[in-house]
Amino acid sequence: MTRPIQYACSPAERYCECGRCQLPPAPCIDLGGVVQLQRATFTFSTFLILLAGLLAFYAIGFAKTEGVHRTIIAERTV
Ligand SMILES: [Zn+2]
Image (tube, rainbow, N blue to C red; front, side, top):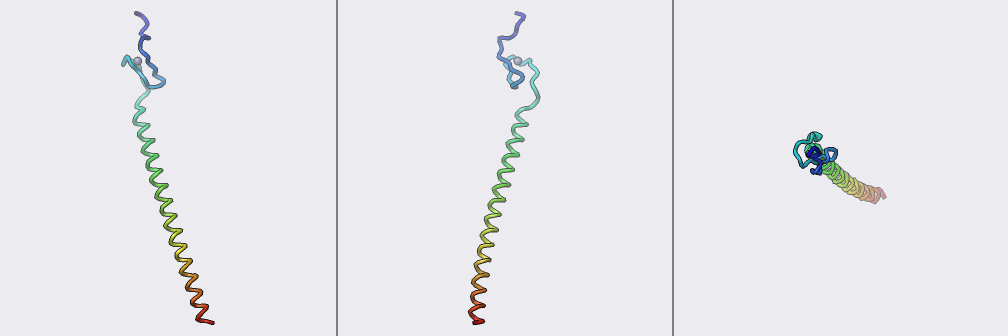
């Protein structure tokens, strides 16, 4: 038994069945960090989109109010 290749170990894919392979360190932590970063980016972009929508809403409202104001002033002047 000089060949312990009965295990389907694949250290390159961070997979080991024999428990004696030297795997690259800590893939889960990296993946979790990436997922957390993606979540943070997603939350931030969603917040930015909502903020932009709110600003656009206020801008449209302000423009409408300004237009009404101008028409009132114009009517008063006439
Ligand atoms: Zn192994």
